[in-house]
Length: 86
Image 1 (tube, one colour):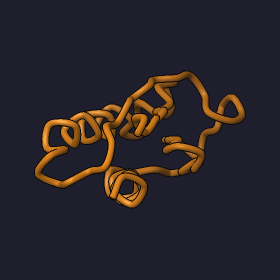
Image 2: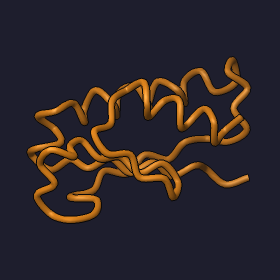
Image 3: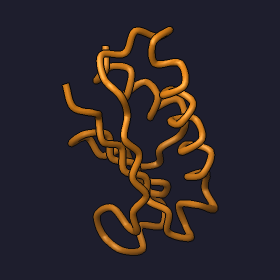
């Protein structure tokens, strides 16, 4: 099965609101993939502006597969990833 693609916006607004913490958390999942019994790996891609440019109040924005999460935080992103990889 192919890796799950997770795109994290790294525009200034998203980085200031926690995008880098989200990336670090996602990277840690690959380290414990076997322990968590994930069905596939996770491919992290950093992008500039998912959706409209200057998304302000919606920052940070993360795309997990085809699901876009606005006002993302580590917990919501990890929950979505785990749901899509179990």
